[in-house]
Length: 449
Image 1 (cartoon, helix red, strand yellow):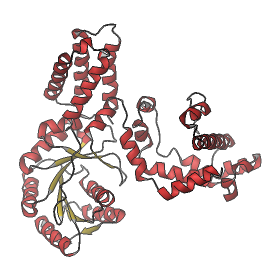
Image 2: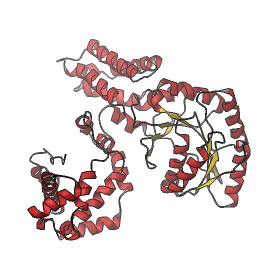
Image 3: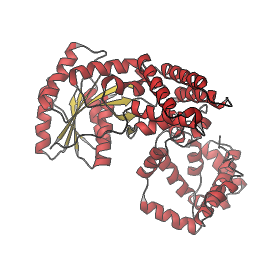
Image 4: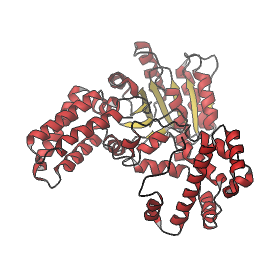
């Protein structure tokens, strides 16, 4: 996500670093490269030009040329302008209704049905809501079944009317059903087409008029770039929706849609889809996205994802085991499971400041833990509790059982021993200083593969 844009902006700012003195000429040269980077990211030319003009005006107005660290001041201005370009601040949902009605619109293939289920999970987990999903796509053969499967996955009931081909009736009946059965939120999935057409627009307008939703969300595939922006404008002209949902930001999206859409339709991006898993949905924070675009990471989102998996009781048990030096491979397995639930490993590493460049050209498979798990599962319960008893013959047996080599088993055991020592040092209050000493000045653990 945004990797190419991040690289190009980094190169643009290097123009300033390469000069002994900052002048109006090399500031202009830098901003020319910034504009080129935005255009390569599929940002509309007019928006890119206006953006760099605003940055230049503010840069000269703030005496960047005579600032102590002019390069940093210019980056700060670009950062602030990126935040404004993408909406300024995170935008919430209007959930004031009884029930609150959320209408989902968009083209076929944009990810509406998947987002509907993801939103239900988010509402249950984050807002303590009891949502009802409504299967309003009566044309696509698998749409109703897909929503039923995903509804079951997130623990949300799905309202359907088999045989009824009138989506307006279905939506109205679903809201009445929600009122009678204690649902506080109704999320209506609607039909899409392969392209914007009059029939689809008329239908979504009729549903909108009939149910008068508290929120209308337009779902768009971010990988379609400027086409996504144009489609959003066409829908907004007819629906006047409340916010945008960008899906597939984990793919090869160049970022143009995220950077342009607010300027074109003047509606906020409210959510972003960051993967195929049901939990891969994030509230869109323009400031955090600007941080990531400029290579500063997104440590706040990283911590939030970690906190979602945090279990206070388990943490207390873990502290006791560490204090008694009883941390074993079963405990390690639990930690791996928590990390895996947080999302894509490469995406998570990209949230840590400074790590995005290190992992940029590295192929980090989300199944990277598989061989580690296989080795641990091939150990006996006693071996997991007391790894020191694992001798050469046991290592050979574990390697055969896990489909790995003795060398890989040795590497894992060595890593685990180092980790135990580090955790013990952290417990004693040695903190990061001792951890870095253990890592040999920050070289890090050897990888298993």
